[in-house]
Image (cartoon, rainbow, N blue to C red; front, side, top):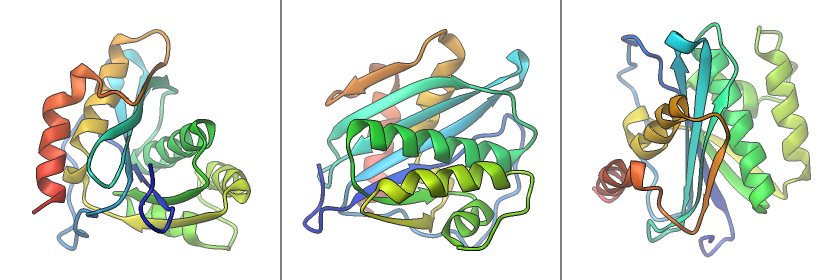
Length: 189
């Protein structure tokens, strides 16, 4: 499940259950390579968060996915950072050694890319992610627009119905099929 260069693409993001202002300078969806799409959903009504991720190969075939409950968070940057940590842990557990991590929070992607100590409220999680990726052969971080990650968003929202983590290997979760096809259309346009 890798492109010719052996790199894996990890998409991480979040969804906040309220209107979020969007930046006009969004990056294009990545095309033609493996992608893991991660979303973080704030489930305010239950005081917890949800994580979802989907790994696809360069042909758009699902290689792995998960949906899991996370802790309560205070804001969108914390949500994005925790989602990124969860998808990195998932990618490592599944066995990927080269990752391109893509998220829709430019501040989080910059913090993860920076060798400087992050003194923000999420600095300890950023440091944790940077420690985790030391065991990975090659990692880079990219910023993408959030509408390229609908399937992972659905998996994060699905977590609100769960009491345990759900994992799918080489299978597309039925709950995310429609949004998975929408993602594929966006990636190929």
